Image (cartoon, rainbow, N blue to C red; front, side, top):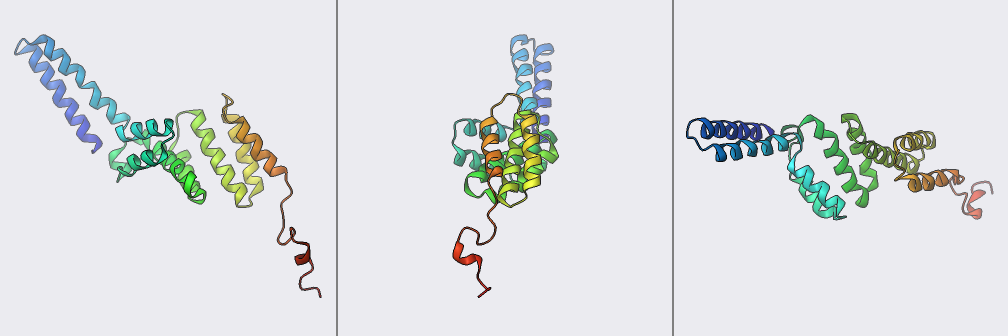
Length: 188
């Protein structure tokens, strides 16, 4: 649903509530209808599809969360500007299970648009660090890990950050270093 239709619906409910309270003397029903207008206003700022997908992420049902996110066809017309970052963040989390290579652009966009909570920013930077380390960009990965550690004020991701730092401490295997017969190839 377009985000502006919700505002029109809220305006209609407010007008109907005022009409019922003052012109028809149905004060009780007028107050109820007037209070119901808060619901579309709330859904203007917090999209219902994003809320439902957050619910399924909390329940660890990533397939259903991705299904609800796919119902958002054009995020710029359906979401408020404050929700753009969370849309990309949730899209990145749905792709994290299947194909980690697709996560990086979504997390970059999520951080670019902005995430409200520090934990969400920490998770996004941790995903970017994991992607950078897997692609061999160790300096960028360490910088992003330090940034994620600063953002993780509650300490929820300390174990993952520690595992990634341990992974960085391992010597990087250069090409054919793991196979001793391949080291001298071409010298004979």
